[in-house]
Image (cartoon, rainbow, N blue to C red; front, side, top):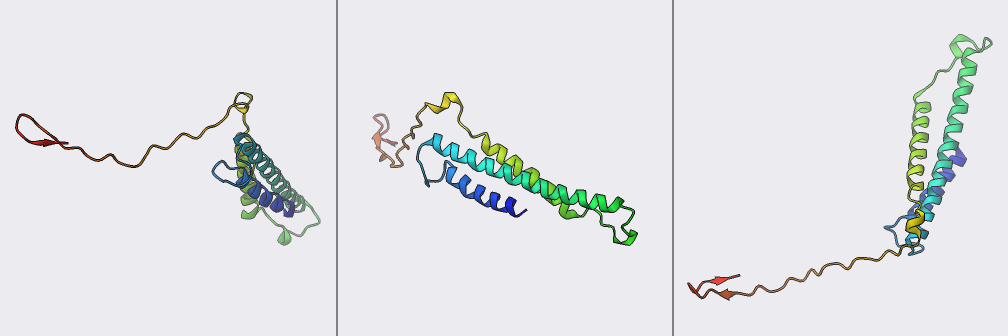
Length: 139
């Protein structure tokens, strides 16, 4: 679990650097997406470590529950922490997989991404035109 926590922490740091919305690190989108994939791999490894630790403890609880040498009043059962651990491992693996999906395909690797110019927010002044028929002003 300690290794899982460390991998998750480093996965967060690497993923934040690899996000397109941050200006940390490289400006190249392909490099940024590769960094995000590295963060996704760290999340998948963290989820697998969590899954292994929780499942090993569940196996130990099951083994001791069915052991004849364990007194009846000293037997453990699955608690909510095991189910939370399995859920957390599943969500971590799912999140890492989604980050790994941001890997650029071969078609997109050579493309250059250009920022679109933002439209001007300055308004043009209203020009009043007088109507030749009635003498009213129109916009």
